[in-house]
Length: 315
Image (cartoon, rainbow, N blue to C red; front, side, top):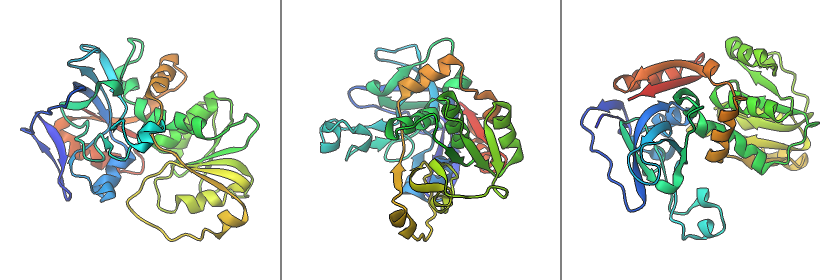
């Protein structure tokens, strides 16, 4: 099959990559559409030391199993089910997990992929492929509501106007939280303005340590330091960025101001599909470009441009 492969140094399209072979309970999925995530760009910079087929955001058609013939999206964490974390009901933290396109499992920038059947979620006919491909990052945005007790009267700030920041802002808006998004790109902020979401240019923002909840989606190594400038004492910072680069940081203000810092990663795929079906999340304005799989390297280059939001790859 054709696949976009990262060998630790370069990204290339292999026209004759081995077809995936699954273990018992795993299902082959023919990829219909995939999305480039910031994590993919960080992997190419060395994050997770991953080699293999890139990509973890997708919509496809199940080729076997209980959902054979149906369009599906899938949770990216593939777990053992028997370790202490799995037994505690925390399978996304499985000690022996593989993660689609991120950790020891080939990903979605290919004609086919393999996932456990239990990971697959059917996509209703009312949700298009271009909507469904956003299910994984939307689930990550929804996860914040599972980790933090959000209240309508809280002052919420989202740092970052890129792929995830846009979705977090739309989710918060749907939850009547009235977020303010701090971003760098006027065109990206304009998308949010049209949706009735408050925005401010990063250079014009006045950090005042008054926000109850700050969600860091900058994709920058200094994102936590930026969030600390906005959050109030005893407020909460939610970290969503995963970056290859490291940065020095003075943690004393977290102690002095008694700030709660929450790491937040994957979320509920079924809830994401259900929310897409409501039409309350507008994804079409977020799509910058679509490339064929044979031009996947160019798609990654496009996605790395400051003005890009979501770049799609179609096998």
